[in-house]
Length: 259
Image (cartoon, rainbow, N blue to C red; front, side, top):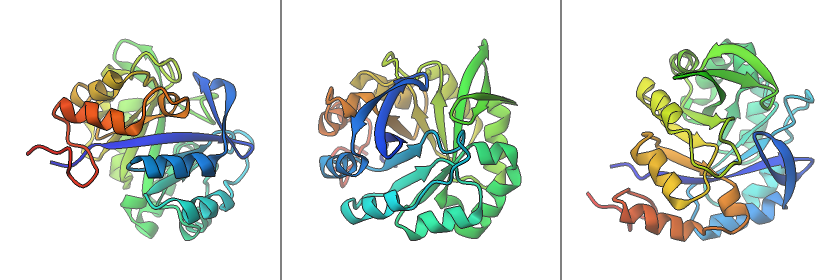
């Protein structure tokens, strides 16, 4: 049984960690390197850094953050935002990132995902999908930090991403993001059932139970959260203890695994 991963997400704007609701009303949450180091020591399995304005401002994600983080953090981390070329990916990986996340560039040029997977390996390529519900059991893909509708059905798109070589899907519900009312379980389950690559559930975590629901009911392989960790509502240790009590296998070192 593979352990389920707990992944704090750090949304970055102008070099600071921010958090909002539905991708809007952003407020400052601190220095990214300090927060990353804290999460690493607290038992996070991975970290995700998303420069949430890089694509909309047509800016390249800089590698300096990855370099600073790699000097302080010794768990895998993903960097995304404004990645458009193989050179962008190479620079970030060389700077210490373990994976890169692509969204807008993948939608605008699906062949980019295939080229990236072939060049660096599928394990390095995380396909981020920002989804907004349009009707019952249907969601649309959004790009540019949730600003533009892409005209793509989420389920059809994640299937294509898998075929192109993406190593995992980072699935964010725009409808639930930042509201702390729980993940969109129906969306998470639909995507998890459709693909054979890992799915990271994102958008809406507010209680320990929400993370368990995303795994047990939504079929997620990992859960990503921000608000509950940034504002110290729950520690990673307490979350892992809770999940282990629900029969969910979590790290570290198999201590919470039951086979």
